[in-house]
Structures are given as C-alpha cells and as structure tokens.
Image (cartoon, rainbow, N blue to C red; front, side):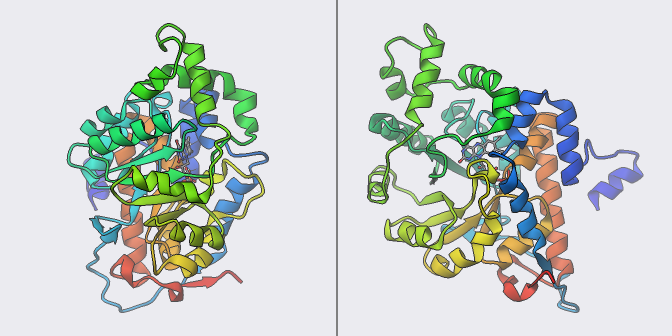
Length: 379
Ligand code: FNR
C-alpha cells in the first residue's frame, strides 16, 4: 500500500527487487570483481542452479475463505520472538560492496528487528557493528579457526559485545574451486579483503611477527592459513560449547545423519545450507535436503534454512517443508551495493511484504499454520 501511495505522489522505488533484475542492476553497478564475489558459485555453478530448481519442484496450493486478512508474521527461534521468520545470512567483507558495509546492514536489520548474522570475516570490527545494531538482535557467525587462542578471543569479544547466538559455519574449511573468483576477481578480492578486514583481534595480532600495519601481506597470509584446512571433528564441538554461553547453531548441514550428530553434540540448531552453492559443485539443492533433516531433528532443535531464497513464495515453501526461519544472502548484498542502509532496507521490506501477501493469499495467517499440506510436488 505504502509503495502504491508513494507512486500516486510521483515517487517510485529506488530500484527493482525482482530477483533477476536486482542481480542484473547490481552487475551494472559493481565492477566484475565485487559482482562475481557475490554472484559466483563453485565450479560450473550447478549447485547455484540446483538451489533455485529445488524451489520450482514444489508448488503452493492456495486455500480459500480461511480468514487470512489479519496475519502475524512473528515466530520464535531459539526461544526468542522474532518479527518474521527471516534473518540476514552472514556475508563477509561487505565494504567491497559499499563503504559502510556491515554497519549499513546492521542498521537496516535493526530497524526491522530482523537478526543480522555478522560474519567473522567482517570488514568492520564486531564491536562497531554491535553498536550500529543498537537495540536490534545480534547473532555472530564463526569460521572455526585453527588457533584455539584466536577462537576463544573472538568468542569472548562477541559475547562482550552482546551477541547472543553463535552460528558456526562448517562447510568452508577451505574455499572451493570458484572459477569466477579465480578468473575475474581473486587477486583484487584478496587485496580488498586484506585492506578491508580490520585485523583487530588481539590474539590474532599477537600471533603475527610484525603488525598488519607493517606487513599487510603476511597478515593476510596468516589470516588465510588460520581459516584453511581446519582439522576438526564432531567431538570438538564441546570446545565451542565450553566457550560460548548462549545457543549454538551449526551451518552447512545437508545430510540428516549430520543433523543427528549436531544434536548429539549438544547444539541448539542447524542451518540447512550449501553456502549458496559456493562450496560443492554438483551438490543437491539445499531445499532438497530440508524435509529429511526437519524430520530427523526438527522436534529436538531449531532447523533454519538457506541457499536460494529469493521471494515470499520461497519462504512459504521452506517453512512448509520444516524450516523455522530462513536466511537470505545475495539479495541483501545487492541491496547494499545499490544504496547502503537504504538499499538493504528496501530489499528486506520488499521480501517481507511479498512473504506476508503470499502467506495470506495462500490461506495462512501465520508461519505456524504452514505445513506440507500447503505444497504439492510439481507434476
Ligand atoms: C556468503 N556466505 C557466507 N557464509 C558464512 O557463514 N560466512 C561468510 O562470511 C559468508 N560470506 C558470504 C559472502 C557472499 C558474497 C555470499 C553470497 C555468501 C554464505 C551465506 O551465509 C549463505 O549461506 C548464502 O548466501 C545463502 O544463499 P543465497 O541466499 O545467497 O542464495
């Protein structure tokens, strides 16, 4: 309504949020390096495509006369009320896309009460992003470093800065073969990462022979080593539990047995994700993995979902297949590229409005009313 009213007054939205057009306009705006940093996937791009195709395998069956004129989008995740079943997925080094980077994203998310999951490859110090998020919810994502001192120091800082939930990403213990990065953007990307990441963690700095200010290439190399080839096992999740008081979710789960192992390891949630198709080329679409995982552990822990969510209908489908909430990645990164905080807000508000209308028009008054009967497999 607001958008149409603004249209009557001669104002049109700042940019289109139709998924294909949003990506195209971001491509026109960003150079090839930053654009492919966001858009690219592993290998041939088969998993990026599979993520989208998986949504198309399900169709919503609208129900009539269900009194869905008044709707409540709220849900409870990890025992905390959220205004909608949507979170911002962790996206690293956002200053590549806009100088305000994560600060802009945090402000937009906070205004809507949507949790932003801050990447530990953030281009702004986690304390500064916490401040930017003001009263908004704070979640932190960890790439599990090889050095336990850096791990503990990072977690301590995140706790102190008021982050409540910890998302540990398991699927990126080394970067995948990403031809788009390699061909077009990898070196500029690494340079940009090197200049964008603040390297402010004291334990990380203590592990260097020279300060990053005196020897930036060494700092970058050490950073890459710290997060590459990490040699971890399920029983080491206990180490994270020891050093984090709040809930922990494991991100990158695609097999129901791994979801069961996560539950056995004592975490509170899993994120069914294939990193937006950026890690294993030829992997199943993430939505294909969701129903089995929800059946396996959905009664015990919160099952969140990401990879390929672009529209309100996608959110309806993921929730109907057993997700408590979804994470969105690339769409808001493109919004950030378009206009910083205003751009992220525009994308997010559009997505929430689309979800609200699709939920209602398909006959549901709240996320809790969605179940598999809302869908049929495509014929
Ligand atoms: C990511 N993702 C990611 N995940 C993570 O745990 N830590 C990170 O730092 C990043 N960085 C990152 C950068 C960029 C540019 C993208 C596109 C993705 C993965 C992200 O959290 C999420 O899993 C996917 O983006 C979800 O897929 P869609 O919504 O982009 O299709």
